[in-house]
Length: 70
Image 1 (cartoon, rainbow, N blue to C red):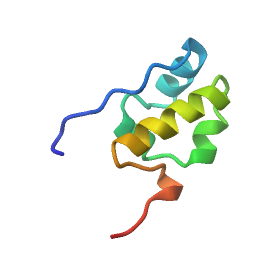
Image 2: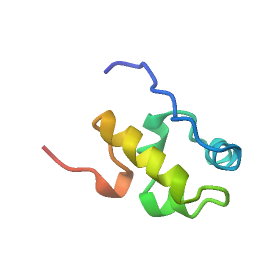
Image 3: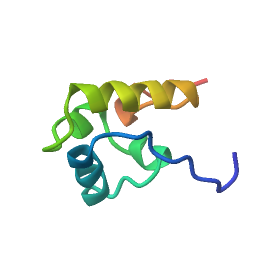
């Protein structure tokens, strides 16, 4: 995949701010965190989590605690 970063999906402004504050500016950044960590961010609700999960799945990625070997 190289060094090309995949943009985050369009999420609400509160979720966007929370993710940016946590240092998550791309999908690759999201994969460095567990699903629990991202979900616990103030501003990241169920809708944003669903959007992030779908974007990760669409790009063959997972949260840190969901990574599979192989």
